Length: 238
Image (tube, rainbow, N blue to C red; front, side, top):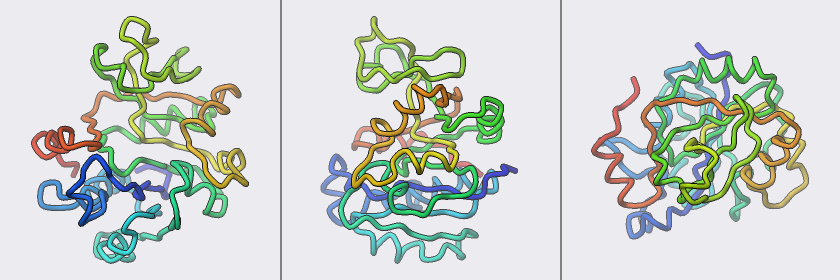
């Protein structure tokens, strides 16, 4: 079991590329194998004993709260942090009181069958402020992503949408992170912040940002093509 007990799930996006589906339901509740996308994410966390969940919500927040409630029926303890207007991917770090222990933060529209225990061990060994789970993609697809420039496990920077021949690697962020409470201080006082622009570059300069490579199944449900692939190919975590 993972020593980490708490996870923040980013579930506030409008899912504009999944319209008209997301006109009626929030992206967090789109169906996958007869359940919701977010329940698939819960499965990943529960596998490692992470049961204290903070759902960061904004768009159609009431529908998400109505669906999951306090989480008891799912064997979880769910609380919510609500943005009245989008505050960026670091929004929860702006609204929540500073945590006292290591925690997970992840994009709720990504599914990744990774080994959180190995990731945690690497995170602690490196004394990282944040560790990003990296997934490997074909070199010809790198121009659609931010690609990690690595020195061993250390992330020096992310190169945004490089040409394949100029890419420093073919490892990209999976949207799954392990973080220390110090990250709250870096974005403190901002009204809008992105982990990709306002947090990770600062940690990289400090030498405190690391990457954990995992070849487990990974999907981004960002558009209909990817969503259809998830429905066909995702192997549920049990």
